[in-house]
Amino acid sequence: MARTLVRAIALPQAIALYVGAVIGAGVILLPGMAASLAGPASIVAWGFDALLGALLAGAFAALASRMPEPGGVAAYTARAFGGGAGATVGWMYFIGAAIGQIIVPLAGAAYLAGPLGLDRTGTFIAAGLILAAPVAANLRGLRISGNLALALAALVALLLLAASLFSLPRQSLAAWTPFAPHGWVAVGQAAVLLFFAFSGWEAIAPLAAEFRNPQRDIPRATIWGVALVTALYLAVAAATIGARMYGSPAVDGVSVALLLGGGLGAGASATAAVVAVIVCVGTINAFIAGAARLAYGLARERAAPDWLAALDRRGTPTGGVWLIGAFAGAGLILTYFAHLSLDFWLALPNTLVLLTYILGMAAGARLLSGAGRALSIATLLMCLAALPFTGIALGPALLIALAAVGYRWARLRRAPTSPSALEAEKESEPV
Image (cartoon, rainbow, N blue to C red; front, side):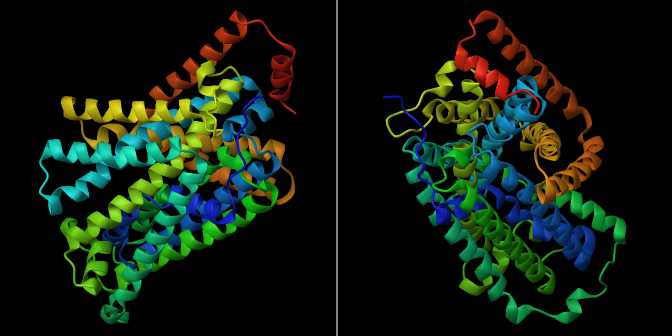
């Protein structure tokens, strides 16, 4: 009997996976940094990016509920523009997500280094352990991974809510004036800084085939996810501003921890470490789950090696999980021995994700109608406006695109075409 993906994701797990994918380690750093850059008016930048995130989430929800396929954004692009475009988007997003799993564990481990007294070697070992936990959970299947996401998302929400509430005694209306001390250009710069705090909605689209009721639960999970993420971000940003918990690099980096630590009577560094590790594990868990299913979808379309399409007895595409874990683990080892910085890894995944959004939203504009099409067009225009700022990282991104198209072309020429492959190829052509 052929193995298939298992419909194991209920609404609570779906909401938790969305929240885990979007709320990343940036929530520890960005409230203070944005406030230092733009003053109290940084709350406007948070609101703008929240709106963009909501548009993006709505467009991906419309696509995922209409086409609940493991290929996610790659499958949507293939349907709209052909298999070559789908392979390009799929591999750009997969590599971007895999590089992200090098960055996130290191960010979490950096917060642990101080309280635990870790040296450089100990910090990298901690990063490896932060990576290993969600890899192991995903190898056990989405039931375990989804429950982990539910627990982590609940804990993160409680910690961020506590940080906002504990700051109430220190809130002052005077802290909101002058409102825009550095001008409105600084508000725009803060919006660019905060843009990727609201990315991640696309990471759950490849899991749509494993929702128990995708047509019903994807829109509901998206609405709940958008509401929770927006409320938590705005609450923490407002608390940071109202308590004047910003203004220097030393304070900006731990502003949320200072808010929380003050209420708990705990040291800021220890509090920051706890919050950062929880957030990082949740983010890695969600992205590995989504990217592994994306690899599974690419392999089924002969845009990736066949072994990535194999499922274990639980219906889990373990090949994709192992590939991401191995890629990220190798990246940690390379970073350690080559003495690379996090900045080395940052530019390329941001560019790859932005290109994924552009092509995915172009697909949405072609495939959807009504509100879904309007959301896709609006988000496409906003993403295109950001493309010129990607800089030299656009070059490697285009090389990845060419390699993806070349690999798929070589596979199709080398392998005999079966009736099922012909059918899949036909479905991937523009509609």
